[in-house]
Amino acid sequence: MGIISVEQADHLYWLGRYTERVYSTLRYYFNKFDTMIDEVIDSYQAFCESIDIPNIYTSREDFFKRYPFDAGNPDSIISNLNRAYDNAIVLRESIGSETLSYIQLAIYGMNKASMSQSPLIDLQYIMDCLLSFWGIVDDQIDSEQVRNMIKAGKRIERIDIYARLGVSGAELAREVRRMVPRVERSGLIYNKENLEQLKALVTAYDLDYYTIVSKVESII
Figure 1: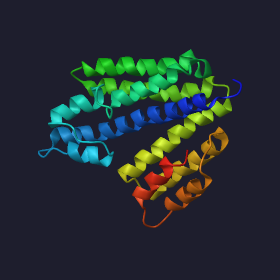
Figure 2 (figure 1 turned 90 degrees about the vertical axis):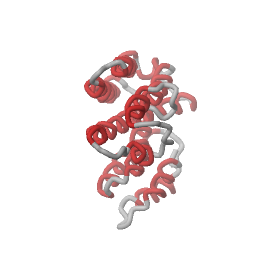
Figure 3 (figure 1 turned 120 degrees about the horizontal axis):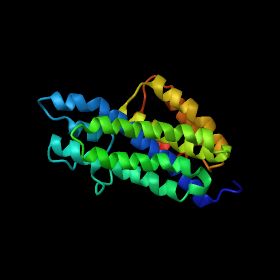
Figure 4 (figure 1 turned 60 degrees about the vertical axis):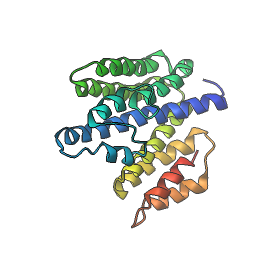
């Protein structure tokens, strides 16, 4: 493609962020689901706190139903997937119909999972669709800049979520190393000072997760 407009760049960046948000929160939901099923004391409140969303749920069962599937809840998984689709649909010419189709398949899968008696099986399909989306981005999109804008958003979102979840410094440092070249080659306007500070923050002996989130959120 030719010159990328500011509006297109914004859509590409947020396409990366929202698809990663869906994928990472689904992984976390999977990891916590069995524990929450078997526990005596509900911990969905702690789940909400860990990813910094309001606890609007009335019970564990309400959380299991509404957090993945309630399109009226702006923090739900389906709401973030819909935002990914909203960005992807206006980028059809930039990313191609086949790339867009994997976001559409993920939405169909979410609708199916919402009516399933075994939703985790169908939610695994959503994760597979998103992995296929990332694969087709590499395989079908010729523009390196387009790929880098999407993946800059992806990497920034992953670091944001991982810092909120309190993952290890080694894991955060690995993600920052993967993020930096994407941001630098994307053509997006970014804050170089915050980028350098982030590199130092994730290698510090005592991790300041709050500041890490603040810095990564203000890179672009």
